[in-house]
Length: 237
Image (tube, rainbow, N blue to C red; front, top):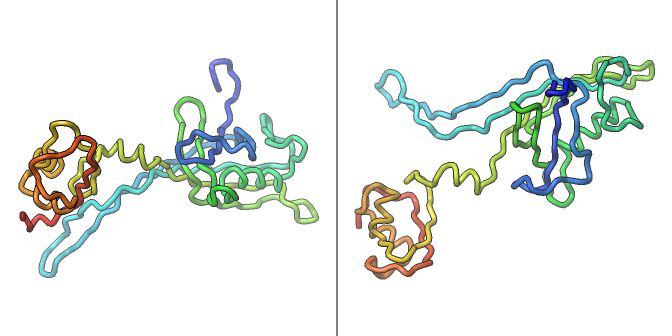
């Protein structure tokens, strides 16, 4: 509940762009989970390469990458109209079928203009704020009308955290020598000093000059774009 004692529902806001600036006005905004989950879980996973050369005991796991953080929610859609504080996103059609249609439209269905599902933000109070895309949805139908129409569905949805490429690059600070870096020369910049800042050694300056088709390493032009790729550390000339 919020400070006024009002029950807050989990909200899902859909965006058409990966910068989360343009909301998708074709779907309910925001979309509310009709019943808040009793719990939710987060999963964070590191990928390791575990090679074991012949004749050696044990391994020396090497970091390869960090998988996107995942958020898993379990909740229900109900059509019995017997649950207190139940919220319908479409009060004119309270069927489970309609509730699922709207949920899929917000989270899962591919948009005709972007050719992909929406980018999403999940909110629940102050603590849960999650920027993501849908990863998987499992629906378990549990109660039925005599004609077979479902009146309750249990949903398990997994959302993968999404960070826009520009934001991801900014957070990484582009400091690893194992990545390709792009820099723009400023007045007074020297190629050997720029090389040293990225690779922690100026001796690779000739490789960088070659990678950028430079005929000299002595002078750079302000505004000149430079590329600093992963290097062959066995080569110094």
